[in-house]
Image 1: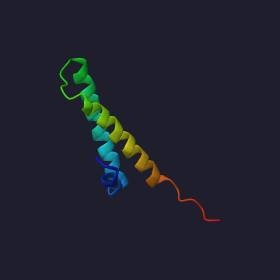
Image 2: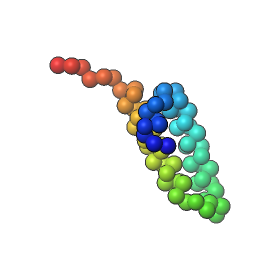
Image 3: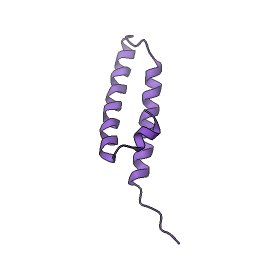
Image 4: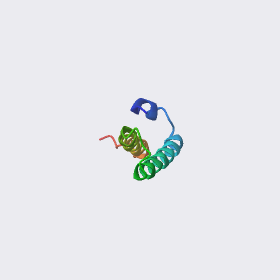
Length: 68
């Protein structure tokens, strides 16, 4: 998911996507432990997506800086 796509979502939608991505990452970790993951790059991309979503969510929830 690109940052532009994430920025187009509302904060509630970002939170929902974040939860889904974290659950998917957990499933990937569990499958990796049992040796069932063929595409190990998916874990890295999931972690990066989570970081992007958290950053954009924090930007949207931050108060606007006061003008001098």
